[in-house]
Amino acid sequence: MQPHAISLPPYVFNSHIEAENATKLLSRNGFDIKKLSIIGKGYHCEEHPIGFYTASDKIKLWGTTGAFWGGLWGLLFLPAVFYLPGFGLIAMAGPFVSVLISALEGAVVVGGLSALGAALTQIGVPEDEVLKYEMDIKADKFLLIVHGALEDHEKVRAVLGTLKAKEELVC
Image (cartoon, rainbow, N blue to C red; front, side, top):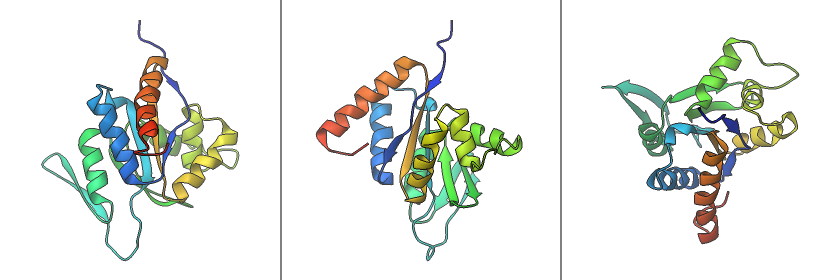
Protein backbone atom coordinates (compact mmCIF):
# COMPACT_ATOMS: atom_id res chain seq x y z
CA MET A 1 0.00 0.00 0.00
CA GLN A 2 1.26 3.46 -0.92
CA PRO A 3 1.75 5.74 2.12
CA HIS A 4 -0.63 8.67 2.15
CA ALA A 5 1.00 11.88 0.91
CA ILE A 6 0.77 14.76 3.35
CA SER A 7 2.03 18.30 3.22
CA LEU A 8 3.49 20.23 6.10
CA PRO A 9 4.34 23.93 6.06
CA PRO A 10 7.19 24.86 3.71
CA TYR A 11 10.72 25.49 4.91
CA VAL A 12 11.73 29.12 4.34
CA PHE A 13 15.26 30.08 3.31
CA ASN A 14 16.64 33.59 3.27
CA SER A 15 18.75 33.10 0.14
CA HIS A 16 19.08 30.89 -2.89
CA ILE A 17 22.38 29.63 -1.46
CA GLU A 18 20.61 28.30 1.65
CA ALA A 19 17.90 26.63 -0.44
CA GLU A 20 20.51 25.09 -2.73
CA ASN A 21 22.58 23.81 0.22
CA ALA A 22 19.48 22.20 1.73
CA THR A 23 18.50 20.54 -1.55
CA LYS A 24 22.00 19.19 -2.15
CA LEU A 25 22.28 17.92 1.42
CA LEU A 26 18.95 16.12 1.13
CA SER A 27 20.09 14.56 -2.14
CA ARG A 28 23.42 13.43 -0.62
CA ASN A 29 21.48 11.86 2.26
CA GLY A 30 19.44 9.73 -0.12
CA PHE A 31 16.21 11.71 -0.07
CA ASP A 32 14.11 11.35 -3.23
CA ILE A 33 14.37 14.90 -4.55
CA LYS A 34 11.41 14.31 -6.86
CA LYS A 35 9.38 14.87 -3.68
CA LEU A 36 10.73 18.43 -3.30
CA SER A 37 9.54 21.72 -4.72
CA ILE A 38 11.40 25.05 -4.63
CA ILE A 39 9.64 28.38 -5.14
CA GLY A 40 11.33 31.79 -5.34
CA LYS A 41 11.81 34.85 -7.43
CA GLY A 42 13.80 34.32 -10.56
CA TYR A 43 15.65 37.60 -10.29
CA HIS A 44 16.94 40.21 -7.87
CA CYS A 45 17.65 43.10 -10.14
CA GLU A 46 15.90 44.47 -13.19
CA GLU A 47 19.16 45.80 -14.65
CA HIS A 48 20.11 42.37 -15.99
CA PRO A 49 18.17 40.35 -18.54
CA ILE A 50 16.67 37.10 -17.36
CA GLY A 51 15.16 34.17 -19.17
CA PHE A 52 15.16 30.47 -19.70
CA TYR A 53 14.99 28.12 -22.63
CA THR A 54 15.52 24.48 -23.43
CA ALA A 55 18.44 23.15 -25.43
CA SER A 56 19.03 19.43 -25.97
CA ASP A 57 16.44 18.53 -23.32
CA LYS A 58 18.18 20.71 -20.73
CA ILE A 59 17.01 23.96 -19.22
CA LYS A 60 19.33 26.91 -19.80
CA LEU A 61 18.88 30.05 -17.75
CA TRP A 62 20.65 33.33 -17.39
CA GLY A 63 20.30 36.19 -14.97
CA THR A 64 21.55 37.00 -11.50
CA THR A 65 20.34 33.67 -10.03
CA GLY A 66 20.72 31.67 -13.22
CA ALA A 67 23.32 29.28 -11.83
CA PHE A 68 21.07 28.53 -8.86
CA TRP A 69 17.94 27.78 -10.89
CA GLY A 70 19.91 25.98 -13.58
CA GLY A 71 21.49 23.76 -10.93
CA LEU A 72 18.19 23.05 -9.22
CA TRP A 73 16.48 22.33 -12.50
CA GLY A 74 19.15 19.74 -13.14
CA LEU A 75 18.12 18.02 -9.88
CA LEU A 76 14.38 18.68 -9.63
CA PHE A 77 11.72 18.18 -12.25
CA LEU A 78 8.92 20.27 -13.78
CA PRO A 79 10.85 23.55 -14.01
CA ALA A 80 8.69 26.58 -14.69
CA VAL A 81 8.71 30.35 -14.62
CA PHE A 82 5.48 32.29 -14.20
CA TYR A 83 4.61 35.94 -14.06
CA LEU A 84 2.16 36.20 -11.17
CA PRO A 85 0.40 39.53 -10.56
CA GLY A 86 1.53 40.97 -7.25
CA PHE A 87 4.70 38.85 -7.23
CA GLY A 88 6.38 39.38 -10.57
CA LEU A 89 8.50 36.64 -12.09
CA ILE A 90 8.42 33.48 -9.96
CA ALA A 91 10.58 30.45 -10.72
CA MET A 92 9.82 27.03 -9.33
CA ALA A 93 10.52 23.36 -9.79
CA GLY A 94 9.01 20.16 -8.46
CA PRO A 95 5.50 18.76 -7.93
CA PHE A 96 4.18 22.16 -6.81
CA VAL A 97 4.31 23.33 -10.44
CA SER A 98 1.44 21.01 -11.37
CA VAL A 99 -0.55 22.18 -8.32
CA LEU A 100 -0.14 25.82 -9.40
CA ILE A 101 -1.09 25.00 -12.99
CA SER A 102 -4.17 23.19 -11.72
CA ALA A 103 -5.12 26.23 -9.64
CA LEU A 104 -4.62 28.53 -12.63
CA GLU A 105 -6.44 26.34 -15.15
CA GLY A 106 -9.27 25.46 -12.81
CA ALA A 107 -9.84 29.05 -11.70
CA VAL A 108 -9.46 27.85 -8.11
CA VAL A 109 -8.47 31.34 -7.01
CA VAL A 110 -11.22 32.14 -4.53
CA GLY A 111 -11.74 34.07 -1.36
CA GLY A 112 -9.28 36.80 -2.26
CA LEU A 113 -6.33 34.40 -2.50
CA SER A 114 -3.72 34.79 -5.22
CA ALA A 115 -2.99 31.88 -7.56
CA LEU A 116 0.04 31.09 -5.42
CA GLY A 117 -2.07 31.23 -2.26
CA ALA A 118 -4.75 28.98 -3.76
CA ALA A 119 -2.09 26.43 -4.75
CA LEU A 120 -0.59 26.52 -1.25
CA THR A 121 -3.99 25.81 0.30
CA GLN A 122 -4.46 22.91 -2.15
CA ILE A 123 -1.37 21.22 -0.69
CA GLY A 124 -2.62 21.71 2.85
CA VAL A 125 -1.17 25.04 4.01
CA PRO A 126 -3.80 26.63 6.28
CA GLU A 127 -5.38 29.72 4.74
CA ASP A 128 -4.33 31.85 7.72
CA GLU A 129 -0.65 30.97 7.04
CA VAL A 130 -0.71 31.56 3.27
CA LEU A 131 -0.10 35.31 3.61
CA LYS A 132 3.13 34.66 5.54
CA TYR A 133 4.52 32.47 2.73
CA GLU A 134 3.39 34.93 0.05
CA MET A 135 5.21 37.70 1.94
CA ASP A 136 8.31 35.49 2.16
CA ILE A 137 8.30 35.13 -1.65
CA LYS A 138 7.80 38.87 -2.09
CA ALA A 139 10.78 39.42 0.27
CA ASP A 140 13.01 37.33 -2.07
CA LYS A 141 13.04 34.29 0.19
CA PHE A 142 12.74 30.71 -1.06
CA LEU A 143 10.25 28.03 -0.07
CA LEU A 144 11.12 24.35 0.00
CA ILE A 145 8.04 22.13 0.02
CA VAL A 146 8.18 18.42 0.85
CA HIS A 147 5.58 16.20 -0.84
CA GLY A 148 5.25 12.72 0.61
CA ALA A 149 4.46 10.55 3.59
CA LEU A 150 5.11 11.46 7.21
CA GLU A 151 8.38 9.49 7.06
CA ASP A 152 9.59 11.76 4.25
CA HIS A 153 8.86 14.85 6.32
CA GLU A 154 10.63 13.35 9.34
CA LYS A 155 13.73 12.57 7.27
CA VAL A 156 13.83 16.11 5.83
CA ARG A 157 13.38 17.61 9.30
CA ALA A 158 16.25 15.48 10.65
CA VAL A 159 18.62 16.29 7.78
CA LEU A 160 17.83 20.01 7.75
CA GLY A 161 18.07 20.06 11.54
CA THR A 162 21.74 19.10 11.23
CA LEU A 163 22.30 22.11 8.98
CA LYS A 164 20.52 24.42 11.39
CA ALA A 165 22.55 23.05 14.29
CA LYS A 166 25.76 23.71 12.33
CA GLU A 167 24.47 27.22 11.48
CA GLU A 168 25.21 26.59 7.79
CA LEU A 169 21.76 27.91 7.05
CA VAL A 170 18.67 29.06 8.89
CA CYS A 171 15.24 27.56 8.22
